[in-house]
Every structure is written in C-alpha cells, then in structure tokens.
Image (cartoon, rainbow over all chains, first blue to last red; front, top):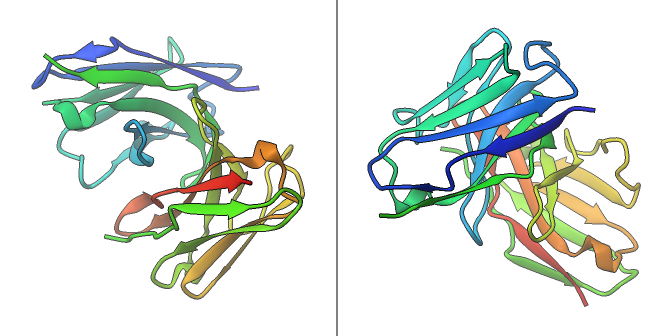
Length: 118
Length: 107
C-alpha cells in the first residue's frame, strides 16, 4: 500500500524560499496510478490546495498562489517536491502531500509543520 | 472563484443521525468529496463522487448532492465520529476547492 512521508526544515525566515519533500513508498510516482498534490492547513483553519503533478510532469497550481509555487518530481528517488517563494507568516501551516485522482485525494501523508518566522 | 459553505459546527447525540451540509452554486452538477479529520491527524476520504465510499469506510457514512446543497449523512453516530469534516469539489475555474469545515460534536 502506498504511503507518503513529508519532510522539511520546520522553520523558514520571511522572504525566503520554502522547500519540502514527500517520499513515496509502496508505489512509484511514475506509475500513473495517482495524481500527486500538495495541500496545506494553517493551525485551526481549513484546507488549501496548492497544486498537483502527474507522471508526465504536467502541473497545475492554485490560481491564488500560482506565481510562487513550483511542484516537481524525482523519479530516481521516488519523491515529490514543493517550492514556495517569498514566504510570509501567512504561509505558516501543516503541509500535506496527497495522492489520488485529478479531483479527490485518497491517500495522505502525516503532514509536516512549517513555521515562517525571523 | 467558486466557494463552498459549511456550517461551523453540528452536534448530535450518540446513536442519532448527523447531517453536514455543503452549499455551493449549482453544486449538484459537480462531484462532491468528503473528508474526516481528527485532531492531530491527516484528513481521510470518507465519501467520493457524491455518494461512493472508499473501502474500509463504514456504511454509516453516506452522501447526497442536489441543486445547491450536498449532504454528508452519518447514521448511528458514535463517539469516534467526532471530528472535522470537509467537503471538496473540482471547479473548472478554481480547480480544487475545499469548504471551510464543520466540527462534529458527539454529545
């Protein structure tokens, strides 16, 4: 069964670039079985979809964040990556990677907390 | 952009039926998906495509969708059902959209 594990620095300074990794086990990110997404959740708040990537390398992003977000995949490491530029305190959240269809999310990682603070 | 509206909270006694709504413009024309999230845990998909259950999800969880409202129904509510519930759709202009979430309290 496919499992996802997010990892990241935990703390990033304002204006810097955030980089997170999602390691996929039990399946290949290039199998075509899933679309892979990043979703975040500020403490005590709701879920926000950031974007998705497919095995072809095609990506789609949340229109409200499109200029700051990049999602990529490394098939040799079976990992997904999220890059978010020019971070502010508003980007403080738990970040999840998830796999599923184009439009729903069947499997989720446990999430990684990211704090933006100087 | 497309928006989904959920009540902030719903309360129900054990053994009773809980209904959580998700409002959106002509949401009946879209596929609605529901997630359960317990404190400190990742969300879990409990209903997809309006009314289908992933394997392992109890039959007590069901969904419906018509016109401007989708509904997640939880029958014979148990203490372990206490959680936040989120609806979600795909929209042509907004892509993935989540509702604001509903906290289900089991009295």
